[in-house]
Amino acid sequence: SQTIHQWPATLVQPVGSPLSLECTVEGTSNPNLYWYRQAAGRGLQLLFYSVGIGQISSEVPQNLSASRPQDRQFILSSKKLLLSDSGFYLCAWSGGGMSFFGQGTRLTVV
Amino acid sequence: TQLLEQSPQFLSIQEGENLTVYCNSSSVFSSLQWYRQEPGEGPVLLVTVVTGGEVKKLKRLTFQFGDARKDSSLHITAAQPGDTGLYLCAGERSGGSNYKLTFGKGTLLTVNP
Image 1 (tube, one colour):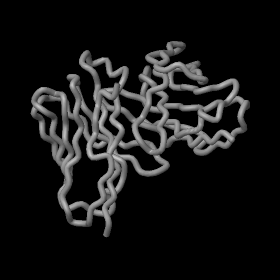
Image 2 (cartoon, rainbow over the protein chains, first blue to last red):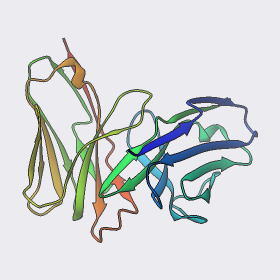
Image 3 (spheres, rainbow over the protein chains, first blue to last red):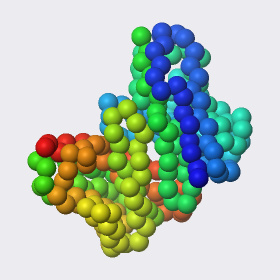
């Protein structure tokens, strides 16, 4: 069965520090992968999606970047975090008309 | 522009009551998905509807996709405290690429014992 792993679960980082969130998928090949941000437990905003290795599409201009170095690995990064980067970040993969989410990372920038 | 409007945004009811939440759009979707999310966790898929007029039942939950594939509803019968959570609808645009889903802002449901 397919599973998705996302870590860490929580993260507190100072302003100006770098960020790296990792997401890996098991049990499927060539998945479509996504990074979302969710503010205050409400709707999800799509940040990046990838349909293959090295292929990244950005949905909104921001302080973040994404990379897909391997088929089932998706990384969300920042060189210098801003206070406004705080939020709940979710990784997801899709296939067969369904999407599956990781457990999320609660990022607090202080 | 918010493509998917969910209503109500907040709903607090007593155990045993029935409720309906709505997901509306002016756009046509090839499919629409409903998710339930608990605090601090990722959304969990409940159902996918793909055919206009389709009705799917999942125990006490009934999902309906509008005939024009622009709207959907979720009806819960005899709500229980375990139904508490954030309910999100998400639409996949026509084309079947499933590259991107558009999410509504969610309905936060609280079922009081």
